[in-house]
Structures are given as structure tokens and as C-alpha cells.
Image 1 (cartoon, rainbow, N blue to C red):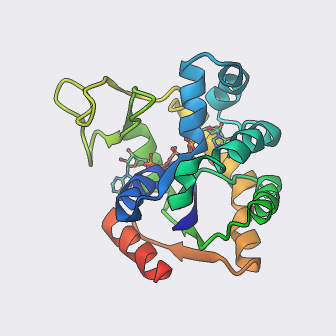
Image 2: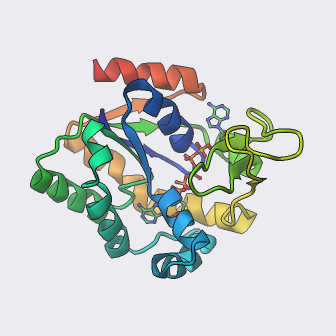
Length: 214
Ligand code: AP5
């Protein structure tokens, strides 16, 4: 499959993308995970991105497109990909359209995960993430807890709260989503690619996406 997952912070894009990778071997490409890995590794990209991320602002489009242009040409993308957290602005969506045209790749669908704001706020304050950049399994202290001593059930690394999980940054991320990312819903509606799923159940969302793809 070649799909884009749209949705507010905490809507469940990462959770759903990870479940979908088991379906047909498509790879999850999360710009958030790539950037967090770069911050942890203290690369030039990480140093440039860190401040924006901790404030809950978007990293500049030019940096993101540079990452995605090379990522989408890696061999594992041949099996298919799930774009999680990208595109996030109209210029990114336009640049993605041009890039895919150049690479002769066609997107199947764009799925918008529509989750109520109160659910989102609750999920963001209770989320925990595996600190291993090669794993980044997503946990939730209420719905999917890590081990009792706070370790990842997959790789055993410590499970931590993200640096952008402060109340201030969460509010800013939701505002940024409304201003910059929500307009992508009508962008992809006009492109006749948009499918919306209104559910808080991961199983229901995954099965709706599988149906869309048939
Ligand atoms: P990014 O990592 O993409 O963060 P986000 O969009 O804010 O999304 P989240 O990861 O917070 O949420 P999610 O929708 O993946 O939800 P999750 O599955 O974790 O980006 C971080 C930052 O990087 C940005 O702020 C920006 O600075 C920068 N950035 C990234 N991409 C960029 C781009 N393209 N352009 C510019 N800047 C960019 O789920 C949330 C919680 O809910 C978890 O605890 C989970 O266990 C729980 N949960 C999920 N589904 C369910 C369910 N069905 N039932 C119960 N609990 C559930």
C-alpha cells in the first residue's frame, strides 16, 4: 500500500501505521521518528530541528523535503509505505505530489483519522515512547502500558515521555495542526484521494483502511 495518514497530534497515526506494516510489509515512514532519532544522535539535522520540536512548531518545509526525497527512494519503499506525519503543510503536499510524479509512484489513498479533542488531550498526556531510536514502540499508561519497571516489551529499552509532551507544547502542537495541517483535508478532498475514519478503536480503523484499499 502507498498511503498518507493525516490526523491531529495524538490521533493515533503512529499506532495505526505500526499495525498496518504487519499487513503487507509496507514500511512506516514517520518524519517525527526520523527527527527524534536525529536529535538523539546529535546530527546537524537534529540540532536544527530540536528547538522547533520542543516548542511544538513545525520544522521548516525545506528540511523535511530533503529528508523525504531521499527516504522515498530507499529500496524498502518498493514494497509500499505508510506516511505518518508527512505531509503537514500545503507546500509539503504540493512538493510530495511533484516528487511522486518524478518517481512514477501513485498514492492509493489519504486517510484522515478523526478523533475528538478530549480523547486526544488525554492520550497525549498518557503516552510513553520507547527511547530506542530503532524501536520507538508507542505505549500508553492507560491503554497499553510498558513493563512494570517502565521498559519496552519489544526491545527492553527504557520507555519515556517525549520532550514535546509538556502542556505548553501540546497546546502549541494542536494550534499548529489547526493552522497548518488541517487545510490538507480539503486539499486531498479536491484531489479525490481523501477517506475519513471516525473511530477511537485501532481495530476498527485498521479494518476500515483495509476495506478502502480493496
Ligand atoms: P510527530 O511525531 O509526527 O507528532 P504528532 O503529529 O504530533 O503525532 P503524535 O506522534 O503526537 O501522535 P500520533 O497521531 O502518532 O498518535 P500515537 O499513535 O502516538 O511530530 C513531532 C514533531 O516533529 C512535530 O511537532 C514537528 O515539530 C516535527 N515534525 C514531524 N513531521 C513534520 C513535518 N512533516 N513537517 C514539519 N515538522 C514535522 O497515539 C497517541 C497515544 O494514544 C499513544 O499513547 C497511543 O498508545 C494511544 N492510542 C492510539 N490509538 C489508541 C486507541 N485506539 N485506543 C487507545 N489508545 C490509543
